[in-house]
Image (cartoon, rainbow, N blue to C red; front, side):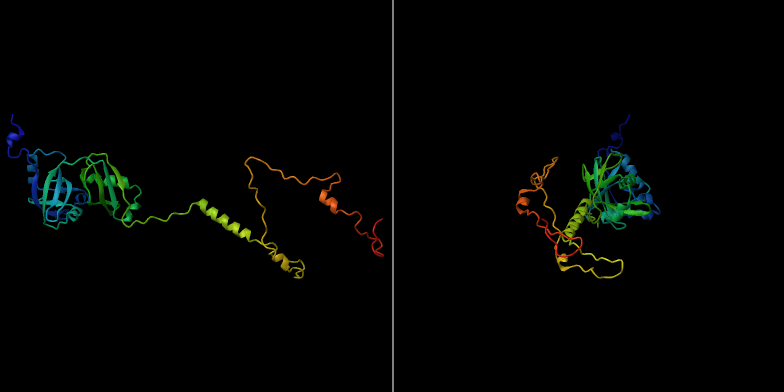
Length: 302
């Protein structure tokens, strides 16, 4: 039997390296499946050369714009392009700074399997998606690779979303075919952090403080009375009442201890019910009497 390397000795151990004219997928007509993915269309001659080489599957390629020193990575979808041409998504052409018909170099590469990727949405509309990770996972099924700094696009609910690839692990370019990859998102461009609402406890505390200030300035008898007969006589508030000042509050017991009761005892009284101070100031029969007939002056009791 003939071995593969002996049948084509000139192809053994070589890499695929070709230069093509680059055009956008829109030149092929309605190919939305290619436009919203990360795979390209190559000519049949490329497939013939790839089958003669020891190419690791899946087929992955590096696209290089030598003139602008830009590069990205992709997979291949079909080999039906015209000879000397390739067709790539328009978002990929923008990343590579390519115009229609510019030259592009293609090399086959082997990329590590992705374990982590971080994206930054380019518009705050991305926050309206209820489950962004699930939507992104479904969109990335049309991609084969991710390259740091690329701006990828995908379509969801008839709307196009753009995501910037900020970070990939374990390298700057990774393969996402049949992989278990963790995903993270950076805040979208133009996103402003909403103002934090004060906790309810703080609001209640402020309300209590305001009420305490109002209570401390409270003055007695500031209202106005009404008589049943409709007259205003006797309703005037005296100046002494209005100028009495704020109500004095009791002094708290700063020595209070939890789970204890303090009893305030009254001064000790004698057997007759009077304290020592009352006894010194007491004077017997010092009052005035009244006559039932209201005649004469009141006489003291004897």
